[in-house]
Image (cartoon, rainbow, N blue to C red; front, side, top):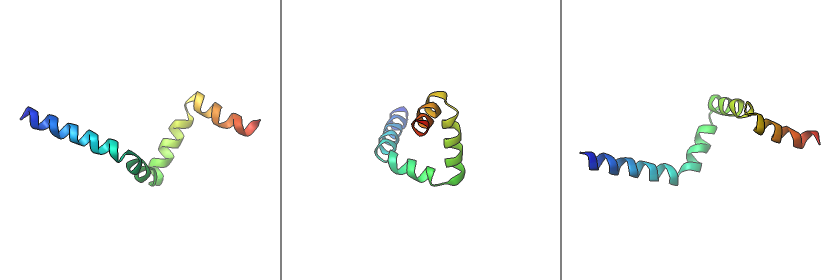
Length: 57
């Protein structure tokens, strides 16, 4: 039983890794999820500073 769970978990990790960009694009295609991700990313000081410094200079 434990081996089968381990194999299932390993297979799931491989599938998610292989299709990571497709999964990301699908999730970011949903407006609510995209707004949440962008809003929380801009709260990180380094990210917002780096992004907006290119517009100001």
